[in-house]
Length: 285
Image 1: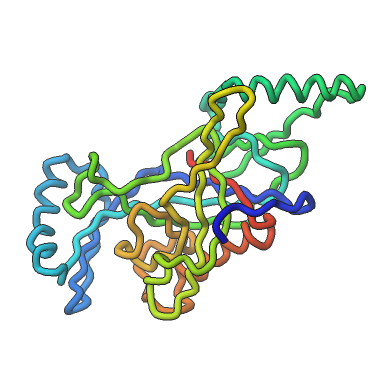
Image 2: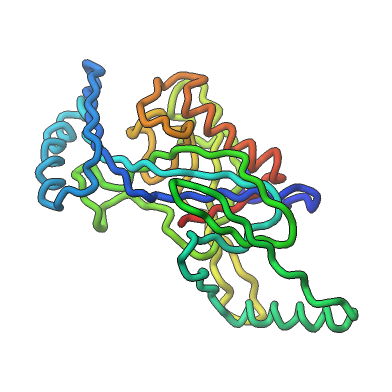
């Protein structure tokens, strides 16, 4: 599949919400030859100088065909919701998200109001507000009229520092916080994901970002990002992408079929593909 499918109108909306708060970063060191593993936790408060010194140890291993890896990874939390379409997502006590106004959105709003008035239709129904607990905080979601339920809660793993611990221009790409949702669609047989291990099915979720139309007569377009949501048994299997795992599972999984990370990831993909009609959306807060 190369793009988002047309979502059946009868299908519930599926929305994913990702947060990286509270910020929880760790350093992972693995020797490929001996399979020894060392994890240094709670490193998020260290200075830039500490990171530079810590990752300088990585340079000789890179030059020597990487018999050893030192990597930084970040834990997060991912919630999966089913029901009415989510319009906005914020933490309780924070201002509502900014809505980007463009000529196209102004025209669409005006045309919708005129069409409703011409039909003698009543004003559109008010949105519905929902509150859920996530990562120790209260998450507030505004939806179209209807119910909303949380059907899954997961821990995630991401890498964004480069192989020398830097966070600047050489760092790995990340899905950034945004008041607007990203669009999701499932993909089978992704050739990058299939490199996880022999016989992998390559299932993942692709992420698209809306590109606002430049003029009132043009339509918005969607840009497919290089970032995926896919299985990641350990940090070396994810670079900039997002790897779900069972909630609270902050240890490495063995890279084999049926591991904990694969089971969690399949559940997330199934929610979008089988419940949401092969389309979903992602908020990052």
